[in-house]
Amino acid sequence: MAKVTRPLRPRTRRLLLVWGMLTPALLGLLVFFVYPLLANVYYSLTSYNLLSPPEWVGFRNYEYLFTKDPRVVTATVNTLWFVVILVPVRIVAALAVAWLLVRAKRGSGFWRTLFYLPALVPPVASVVAFVFLFNPGTGPVNLFLKFFGIKGPLWFNDPALSKPSLVLLGIWVMGDIMIIFLAALLDVPQDQYEAASLDGANGIQKTWYITIPTIVPVLIFAVVTGIISALQYFTESAVASAVASGSAGVVSTNPGSVLGYPGDSLLTYTQWLYVRGFSNFQLGYAAALAVILFVVASVLVGVLLRKVKAFTPEDAS
Image (cartoon, rainbow, N blue to C red):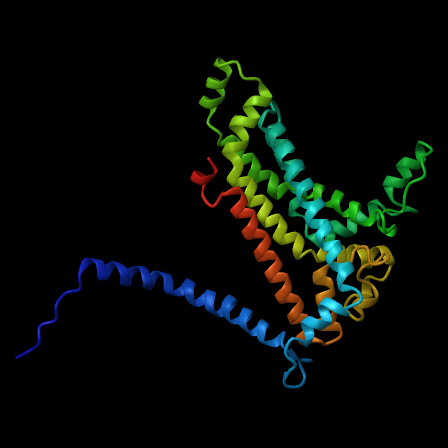
């Protein structure tokens, strides 16, 4: 007598359907995140040059990182400078431009396009153009200042101005954040503004009690993504160092001699990781640098999200 199979219960079918739909994403997470992360932790405990099998050294790489590496402190300080200065400046500039565009009466489409276009320029091209504009000898900016009898600074050739010059570049290409803020501001309910006007609220009060609380989740998104990007800041500072020093072709052959110019002022943490791993072939030590970067980024983002309690829009309200 044939055995009769009982149909699956609705709850079981739903669970199987959910797990079936999640399987591709979970496999991708395991293959492209969990496995590389665990492998990176393992290699950070070894001496590995990519040519011979890894040799177990325990925590020796971390000991050297925290006590003996001559340039890791400089690279860390420069990276934190970009986190503390570049991220807030870009966010404030993008929010201010979006606020003005919301209130633009005429030509708003033209101005939105104008402010967004620089974000479409490839990073390398935008940095090269900016270094040319701020060239101390032949750049249009210094020539303009010279016309008024002002001696232009060295900009990217001055250790004190190289990082602020990159901040100006960051403001110029803030169109990606500006578009997000623009959408958030346009989504603020107008009836709340009308109700506040009837209660006698002025513009500052409307901004502080209506606009800011409504767009808090978008602000947190911009801050979190900005911090993560600043911790991985590489392309802009590397290209600026190479072009300003006149040694752009050396980056691919001997990056350690170019990255950080002038005077290690543009040397970032990820650049130093790249030099140690792919120029000096110290892959184990580079893996240790990467592990520390992952831990710092995770802690910063976790603390930020916990402080603002903005995991969901409901929590932020």
